[in-house]
Image 1 (cartoon, rainbow, N blue to C red):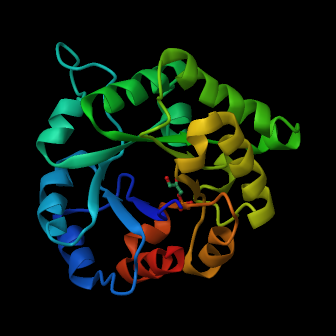
Image 2: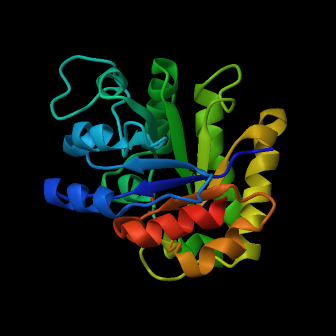
Image 3: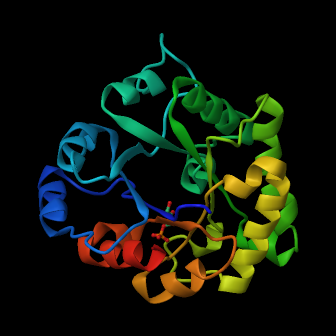
Length: 243
Ligand code: 13P
């Protein structure tokens, strides 16, 4: 049985004050799902302090594929571990499309996270154009394959996958539970034997109003939440819907 997991991706939102208010309002009473909060880098220590004793884990939104050296502006997995980070999002579609991250680079980040002991949350997803051209599964397959080819051994054993259709991110359009389940089922099959235990999250306009029907699908194990994770009460409702 896979434990449901809900992760908040705050993206480039928030402030010191915002984090204070968010945790003052966050009440996860009744939620049994694993919960992860991914703030921007500067707020990791502040949020990490807030999370102590809450049973909620800290995640980063990105990391470098390198371990150290002359890489101005980059943050390594080791540095994240120093601040109590346990998860790192890699390959978010905003990083792929706005910052030109290739699937090969994303694979490097995935492996850098994993070899340091962080759990990578690997984002995959198709654009609207790719969906309309009926290329969804091919695109997702190739995003997964880039990681599989770069790694060796049981790489999926300590990883999380987030299916985030690009056309559903921040648009208010959610994949239907059936559309999402189709892709989640495909991903689980792709992962092979290890796949049975891997948490596969859905992301893209998840809200408390649509969370329960998504989570009812057999291969949807939780959510990666953007906009709705900035509202502590709404986020807590989504966590409760997951389990
Ligand atoms: P929204 O929930 O704002 O659509 O964002 C989803 C996302 O990109 C999470 O990583």
